[in-house]
Image (tube, rainbow over all chains, first blue to last red; front, side, top):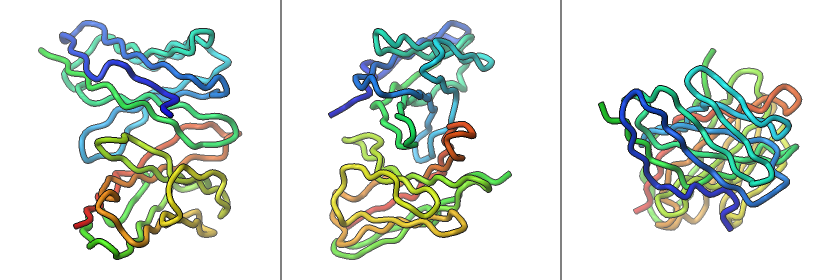
Length: 112
Length: 114
């Protein structure tokens, strides 16, 4: 069963605006969450992560928010740039394993 | 420092054959995990190794196996290949959990089974 869900297969945003990518999970035992960016035929590139003891983490243009009660996290990209166009994957893991449960991904298109 | 290195990058095999894929983790990383990506199933966890021991295994048949060597390098093997095994196989490495949990991926090995 899919324990991590990204319900929006695609998202289109104008350059300079905010991109918000959402992710839901069902397993309350997950304690670490990561976002990856991926281009076709390449490996995922790590973007940002958040531990379950936090509700927000920022790194440059990327901010991840975690709502444990709702089992929901989101990735905000501000401002969005055309180079951000890629597929974004949400992933979750449970201590002490490093095994990641991935969502199906959201394809982000940033238009000039 | 060098990233996660996977070899070979591309390969074509025939049904019934076996294949071995190799992964060299980032220097100092002791945890190596493997994933399969297909259009239909997305990214799925295969197995995880830490200090030469398999720590976790995903829901894949026994035809999929792996191992980790004392230098943390890892290999995965798929025996009796089926058409459905065609996929991008990704290796990821990370330090021990106590040192942080950022998990870095290699470029992947594209396997086509004909």
